[in-house]
Length: 347
Image: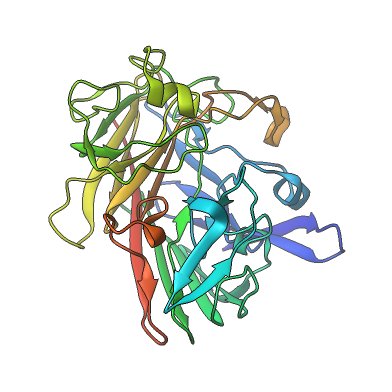
């Protein structure tokens, strides 16, 4: 297990970048700042090593950044309408950090915390953090663990486990931005994407709060049931695409239950790198880096619009307030457990 200093935060706390790996040369960088994925390196069809996620050179990039590159996002990922939830008759006012809504829990959520390292192995690391009662305006003292593990099948598994001492919302995701051509290779419009989703959750307007409808993707740009280039329909004259400035929508997965299943596949013909996504969650946010603009990244890279694709597994956005959606609400002492796997291969 290799580990290196990742610099100091603005208040002087030292942060470490850890590298877990397998026997095939796949190496994943993860830092204890935000339990964040900083790099995923593997070899393409020509034997060239590619780093396939966007990121920064040191912790200050992540501390100052607003894109959530590689971050563990929680307690609740995605948006909550009016920045307000109600649990057992008690209304909790959350931070309005995205128009009048709440995005990814708070501007200083668990993605901005330094997590404890519980255990480290050659191919596995376990992080833990405490989110105190009302720390992000959510009720309950919540202990959260995230385990990153690399298998010899080139799978990066992310396992979440969390428990609160009060009824609360728990809905975690990883916000990695993937570019299978290499993090610095430009846009991903020619990546081939397939998603097992016959429905999606359309949004009201550009604030990206769902209408509450679970709508068919038939005859819409959101139909990825058959593999197609990400850019094929992204410029279509479609109100939903205009609201998101591209794809920034939850796809309702065609899953039969809560088992870990294959839900999406992404492929870059140039490198031959293919990524399968597996999860036990009901939705995935398809986001095409629509608001990344001149972001200075690692190794002198500059990231722009459409420079990556995010496939963020999740409960549906605003599900805590929407009766039509499965709610990520957990009683005191009830365990939140979820697994998402990113599996890489060369085609």
